[in-house]
Amino acid sequence: MQRIENETRNGLIALAAGCAFWGVVPLLYKALDQVDAVEVLMHRVIWSSAFFAIVLAFQKRLREVPKLFVKRRERWIILLATLMVAVNWGFFIYSVQTGRALEASLGYFIFPLVSVLLGVFILREAISSRQGLAIGIAALGVLVLIAGAGVIPVLGLILAITFGLYGLLKNQVEAGPVLSVSAECLIMLPIAAVWLILFSAQGQFGATGWETFLMVASGPATAIPLVLFSYGAKRVSMGLAGLMFYINPILQFLVAVFLFSEPFTLWHGIAFGFIWVAITIYVTAPKRRKGVS
Image (cartoon, rainbow, N blue to C red; front, side, top):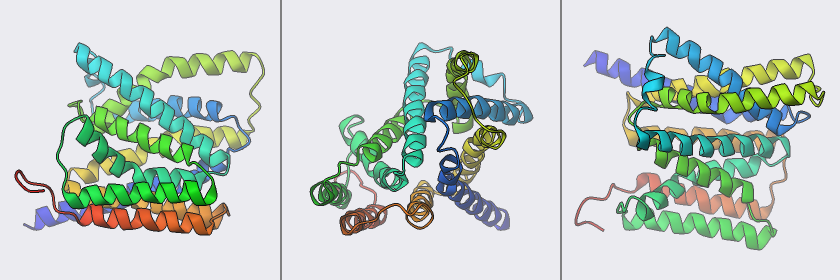
């Protein structure tokens, strides 16, 4: 019993640390706002690949990566997941660099609700009436922001949808998150390397030594929270892991408003209010059982 309690406690600590890490990572990309977002993305791929290789080598699991490409179905799933994560990473970096980190946090607030919708329409999963209400309230929050502030949160929606599709695809792969993300980085690695070599040869990159250091740091900044989250998620319930995830967008929200001084209007307040109510309803809603609506 004591061992189980210790495992649960360690899992909670790892989850909290991983989500907190994700929540403050905008600080890293904001410090790189003078560097082209695509260049930052390519460095992120390269140094994430290197870090994951070290992790898997330490775990003696490097040989497992090629096995993910043996089955044709899994190859296609991993390729599509790679596309989703590349788009997500790229737009997240761009949103932070262009003063739209608040919008990015909005995307990660609503992503779990997008995941529910994908489950309903693609996997034909059933949801409870309370979960349906939560989705409706979140959608209303987004509409309020569009109507009141006259701004369509395009980046937030892109982040929510791509991350939702990414999660949907990942659920179809048997491999754990560290192994599968390593495979995704491996697919992106040649593109990133060629891109950087070609543009460096043309003299289009002019990052300072400090900026180069930060781009190298983007590798561990990508891998460490994922490893922590993966470790923690195996030791607590899925519901608790999902609840802990909200540490991430909450911190992103606070960083955007209080550290980046991004404008937070009345309409933002109303929209986020709707979304936070939706999240509360969603996470407290009982899981749907057969025959129950």
